[in-house]
Length: 304
Ligand code: SF4
Image (cartoon, rainbow, N blue to C red; front, side):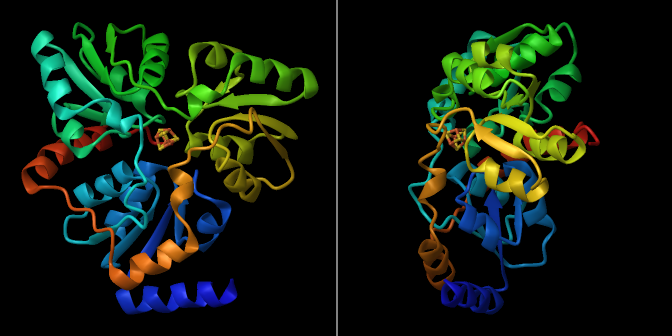
C-alpha cells in the first residue's frame, strides 16, 4: 500500500496533478486525495488550483463539471464507465422537448446532469443550494426541475413553487426505505436521522434533518449528538468520522452503496496518472452554454 501511495505522489509531481475525491468514494481513495467534498465544491477547488492535471475520483458528470469550469486543464476520470444513472435519465433532446411544452418556464437542473443538459438549462443547482436558487427566481414563473424528482419535490415543499418534476431518481438513494428508517429508529431511539434530499418522500418525512453531504459534515461538527442514522450513500460515513470521530454513524441501510462511485481503485488512479486517461473534454459550444447555468448558480450561492 505504501509503495502504491509513493507511486501516486511521484506521478502527481511529474504531472503537476491534483487528486479530488467525492464524499461517496471508497475510504482509501478519500484518504489519498488532496481534496474531498461534494461535486461542485470539488470542481470549484479544481478551477482554483495551479495544477495542470485534475484526477477526478467520482463519476462522469463531476469530471465534466470540472472540465466546464477549467477548460485549460487536463481532467481525468480514472474509470471511464463510472457514470451516474440519474444524470443519464434525461438527455438534452428530451429537455428541449420539455421546454417546447412550457416555453415560458425557467429550467433548473441539478448539478448531477450531463453537460448537454446543463447547456439547455437556465440555472444549475446543488442539493445544498437548490432551495435558494429556486427562491431567487421570479415567483410568477413555472419551473422545470431536472433530473431528480425527489430533490425537485423537496424544493417544491420548501418553497411552495409551481415545479414540473422530471421523473429521474438516484438509484442508490431510493434503496433507503421507510422500513429501514423505522427499524434504525427503534434500535437507536436517541439518534438523529439525517438524510439526503435525493431520498424518497416517506424517508424525507421521517428524517430529522435533510442535508446535502457537505451540510452533513458541517452539521456533525457543530452538533453535540453522539449518534446519527445516515440516510445517504455509505461512503460519507468515512468523511463524517474524520470530521467528528467521537460520534457514532449508523447507515440507514447497508444497501446504500453507489456501484459507480466504487469503481475507482488505487490502481486505476495510478493508471490514470501514467497514461493521462480517461480524458474528459466537453465540446466548446456546449461548454460555454453549460458554464452560463453554473455561473448563474454561483452568483446566488448561499454564503454558508
Ligand atoms: S449516488 Fe446516485 S446521484 Fe450520486 S452518482 Fe451514484 S447514482 Fe448518481
